[in-house]
Image 1: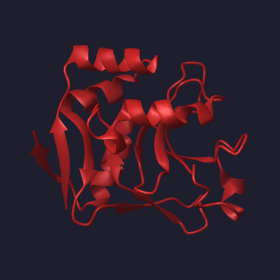
Image 2 (image 1 turned 135 degrees about the vertical axis):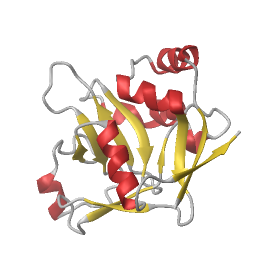
Image 3 (image 1 turned 180 degrees about the horizontal axis):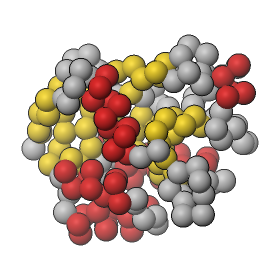
Length: 174
């Protein structure tokens, strides 16, 4: 299965994005943005990721965000400005992608925490019910629960690649 990506960003582009968000990115996300300015799965348009914490036992993955002001649904700045405040209790949370149905993937990167990693944020309450008992960050103020996926973005990318049957073929769009 192919992925579709945009050319990577420059260091000054990444600094501009961080300035717009008012947050610094973890090193792994900066490196990702330099290589690929976001990507999405093509044909089919998602992959399933095993997640035993949710009742159904899997979640969908559709895309990782980049800095794409002309494509609001793929833009890390637009998504975070609209929704990340719902996770105000996690100061270092940055939404970096989503499942195709409005449920983001979030990086939590806090030097004072042992709970850093990539999490699935059930923002739309798709996996509500028994699953919420297994949440790593239980819902607060109707935010939706967060479920741990991997300890690093690199590990998360390898997980996605495995679901695609090995490292995916990249189709770069200019």
